[in-house]
Length: 113
Length: 115
Image 1 (cartoon, rainbow over the protein chains, first blue to last red):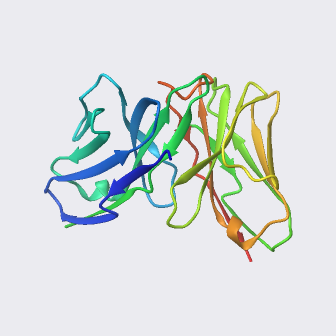
Image 2 (image 1 turned 120 degrees about the vertical axis):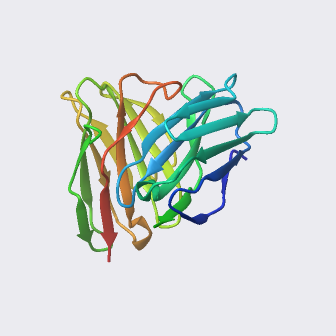
């Protein structure tokens, strides 16, 4: 079954600290993987898009990694800010003529002062 | 602001009723996607349109239907509403049809509450 599992479900950290969010997937065939940030009550915003051949991709303080062999991805946030408080959603896109997006349930991150 | 607009922002209705959600894609985007996000659930892909034609179908119920008009705006029609249909409904748009390498821009969503 095509699934995307994220951990932890929720996380509380202090401002300025780093954190890492995990994503494991069983989607096949794999096309690419994306991380989205979703503020409460708002639409998701893309952070990174990673293809099969990419191991690491950065976007400012966000760094995503992908291990296609173990089917795992992580999103590392450096020097967290209060504005990083949001849900972070891992999305895996299946290969094929039309593709298919499989969404994880997200990790809810709270950054406290 | 993603450039994708959705109306209304909130909608409260009763079971058995029918509602229409509206989405205007970003200028120049030809593809529109609809998603449902229930409480404590991930986003579920419902349906995609490209330049007026249905392109891909996800977990869309038979009670739900959508269309994309010549001006590229899209409407999602939900009928015979049930309590379980209460959710956030998001629209996204992209330039081209396929989701592969193709970034989608999400609207602010419509929160539907069925009482």
